[in-house]
Image (cartoon, rainbow, N blue to C red; front, side):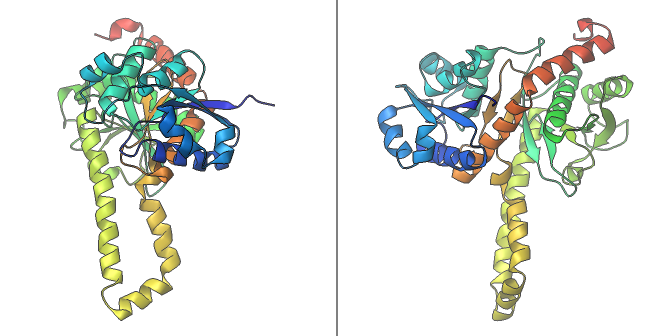
Length: 348
């Protein structure tokens, strides 16, 4: 019998704190009963909420902390005030100590990345960890990174992102040769910034076990042409927020159109099953959770404003990544890739 997978939760993170975190954990537990939880935060606040979920309470341990990181705190302030004794730091530290397999937080993104990098360090001398997000497409689910950890990236960093994204795709999709694309302003080789073109040249010439597709444009993100789309955090975060906003916009348009008259209302009733399927497909809560790639430990960032359903999706993602040994795969892949290029001297 396999040992239960242990998940540490920053119970105070996010816009709604313990209510969302605990509610999400209970939802995820019904799907993945071989899970135990370490809850870090204010025990007098957490305990009464946890008591409403008897099954989860049996699988959970509360670790009291007095400090929680505010959503609007600067990373430097959060480190000074919350390092060592905040719920966020303690949740990450549990992964470092081997007490948990993965940490989930809906807290301040900048603070979470800063604390995670300081506490866990990076694998294989990765310069900058990236945030990888699941992306719904017409064909299948895909991965996009970086979606907000870093503004700007040079060619070597983009190549690292490609290798890390491929490792995640192999762990999640069970594909031996994921297809990788670089997000660009056009598919022609002459287009784009010099660093993007340099990264493309490196990826084309590599012998690593993934297939490099070439450049993809913004309107290709939803087509599912590739398994992994690589970009830097500025454009990646804009793409992510634009996609989320567009999904909400389309939902409002459909609702308005279907309630405009008695004829459209009747049509909506007849097509209700189809609309429900579309709603589930477009619901960003089903794809909630960004994986911090490049660290010596697994950390998942949930959207701060999500509800219990969305937070459960982030936990599910963390469970799947931990179960598939993502960190070990990623570290081995990066080392092998650099060896295929010659030495680490390729990194300037």
